[in-house]
Length: 328
Image 1 (cartoon, rainbow, N blue to C red):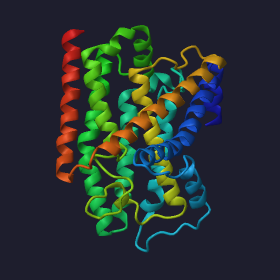
Image 2 (tube, one colour):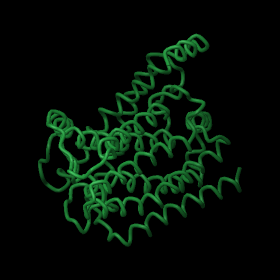
Image 3 (tube, one colour):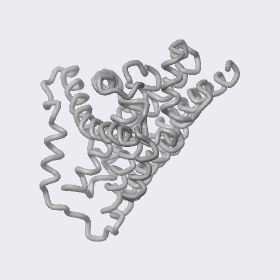
Image 4 (cartoon, rainbow, N blue to C red):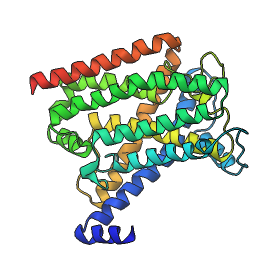
């Protein structure tokens, strides 16, 4: 592996810089994810007239969980120990490939929309298998519900981004962002607006937010994500929480840069990279605050109504692709 990296670095002088920027993206998302969860909880509390926990509460909870002893259910297999690692690893690789701070991440040529979507799907499947592994009724129920939601939301995510790919004539994410910077008028095009609405619906579903799921509930008749992680504690629960937080930050950053890419570093210089980092943080904070406000003003849907919402998002994504094909 060292020989391969050395050869790549020698063949491409900018390889080391790209590796550094991708590592920076992973570090930023790893910290920003828990902070976004804390910010959303704070905004919800303020909107409801409460003080709420501090923004850094999730980070403090993760530090406390890491220090605890790892305890697993008696009849679990190796899946219970590997699934949290797969969830975090898939989120880290997807983050390293995605244009969040810069349009020049490592292996930018392979940062295809299909790769990123299937990396996210890998984490979702690992978490669903984890919920089934303990053999409890709650875990199986949560995994079943998660796969039902994912069976519609994942294709909708793929098709929504494909609507942008049709317009940019490429499915490479950094190339889509670069093309949008070169053609700012695309942002107001019909296929972009339709794809934006579809992608917002998918992000809410993928991150388990209201109206699809309530992350703060423990009622067995309503919970989805919480049902899959009831058997976890200590470092395993910390990994699951961190992985889900990273997915939230990644998806919000993807929405922000695909539709409003201004501020992202496209030159590779140190100053532009710093500006891209600050702008990304501002975009994530604004989007997280808007999602929290929507949660306060929206009631959770009944479970059997959730597929209707996701199907609507999928239809919007298909219409966006069709519009792009007709008007290009």
